[in-house]
Length: 262
Image 1 (tube, one colour):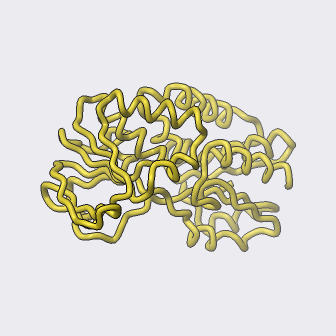
Image 2 (cartoon, rainbow, N blue to C red; image 1 turned 120 degrees about the vertical axis):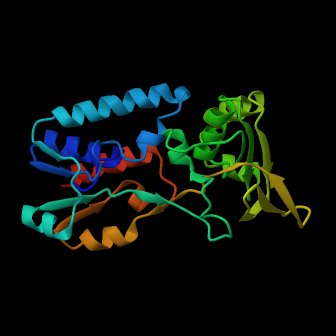
């Protein structure tokens, strides 16, 4: 199993419980993948407990050899001579090709949630999906002035998220003072503002800020998948590297069924 995120962990545990000998490669020094940042905010305690449980159970399941801080390579995989290969290598954050995106006050939402970014007092969060909205709430709870923007209308964004979750989240954002603007496109980032295009009014506008946080989704690591997908007779591709719009339930379900199919 290549990748110790939610999908990889479920696949490893399920296959091990069915009697297979598992080698689990994880390039980082801990299991968890993108669930680490997704569960980092104080209001994500339930997800954090699930992650802690999943790691503990995976590390202690018989028949699983976990190789942390070990990046899989085709050579390492071939050396294991696997009968089956489960690829769960995850995804990378999408970065828009716009002027100013490389500036030092521009951060990925995951780094903000993990406390790895120095965020100022006036913040623009770009992307009003689940991660972007949760990041906006996390910052607003620290008394930051937060504006949340997205190119899509809110109804289209929220249609992708379970109803009870998004209604609760939108209410929390409103009560926390987050200002949400939709149908606006990020065109550029300056040292002290963002330049947006209001699609409804068809006019350009400048919004002052000292920090920009990007949450524009994740891109499957397709090239990494291609490097491994012919190294065994049975190959299964699961989790974020197989989906542009994945979630925890989808990832764990794919991990379970991949292991069942072996």
